[in-house]
Length: 77
Image 1 (tube, rainbow, N blue to C red):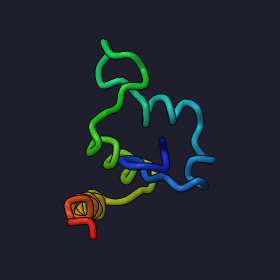
Image 2 (image 1 turned 30 degrees about the vertical axis):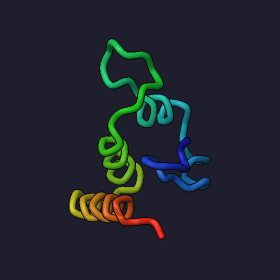
Image 3 (image 1 turned 90 degrees about the vertical axis):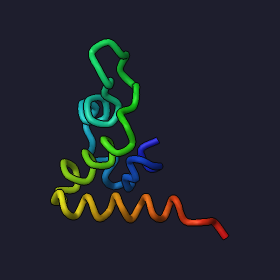
């Protein structure tokens, strides 16, 4: 699940994750009422991964988010 959208992590990045990071960053509940394992929105996850894990700036993350959405909206040949 971590190598697919919205995470797009490499195997090397996944190897470096602690169980705490997996549970509380990637699979944290949306609210206290929801069980662990419920996804955040794709955008929230994408931004968290890019800024916190990969250390990108807000501007770099925004550009990547726009690029990803454009690629996803492009017609498939």
